[in-house]
Length: 162
Image 1 (cartoon, rainbow, N blue to C red):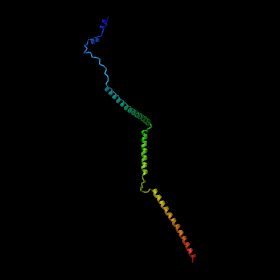
Image 2: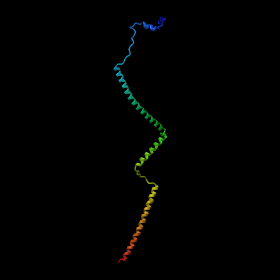
Image 3: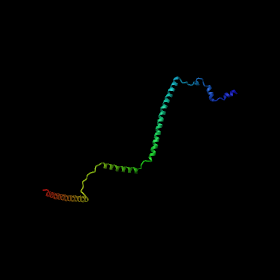
Image 4: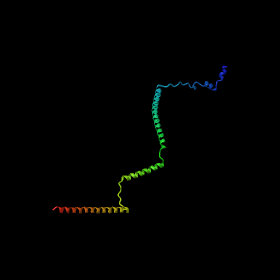
């Protein structure tokens, strides 16, 4: 029976048994790292650790920046609904232009303009001239009366005094 079990070997196993020893590759012992390999590996791990700590700091700063920008975006989005419409902006522009014109005019001195008098102005001037003339005549009559009275009084005092 033992011969039968040997015959049942696979074709591959039979080929391996029949190969000459030179063709068979001896099993290679596992590569053991040298001291230099360990030092190189330690240096690479240290560099990776430093790089990771630098990148994690950058990542934290980026996350903080993104959070601030998201908050700003949300605030601007809320304010977008409160912006004035185009018609309101045009009305504001007209009001501002009108205020500027008024301020510009308020800063200037009033200009003196000479124009021919209107009929109303001419009549009012004539009325004032007539009133001034009448007042002057009345004043002269009053002064003449006072002077005449003073002259009569002086004449009476002169006759009384020898």
